[in-house]
Image (cartoon, helix red, strand yellow):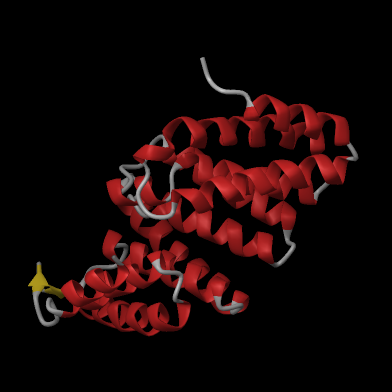
Length: 231
């Protein structure tokens, strides 16, 4: 399936929409789905070069590309680059939002990606703050429908739970992570992309919580409960 997507995307090189070349962006997102950071990064960087040459500041296309590039930087272990590209674009987004009195549809996703990068840097309190901002905006901003399918709100909740665990806030983390797991389970078939990876991340987060908290019995009960067939 990935190779078919690549072939189709390559056939679109040079085609535009609204004066913006689409091919680099689409190809980059195909590589995101394949978790191929070394291939995605140069495509996103070229797409961003075009974005900034032809689009107005704060355009949602730019925010989407920045979020995707930051995720691939993080996957490649380039945490400093990931954080810096997000922080720079979020400053532009903040000015854009203040001028228009509304938030762009890519802001919640950029904040979520920044939270994940801060989490990877073990900056747990900062990650918590950004992830809470992201969650708050998910309910108010007109988020791109594709981003909602690829990165649903429970995905942010899992990251938030992890940031709380990192600060030993286990009592706060438990309901967040359990609710996120249940939401992902209930809607897994609706998501695009690698929904199995989302479920694995949520499962791993619950396990990490109970292990860090020293609650082996609670973990065993949770696993038993989730293994029961639904009625």
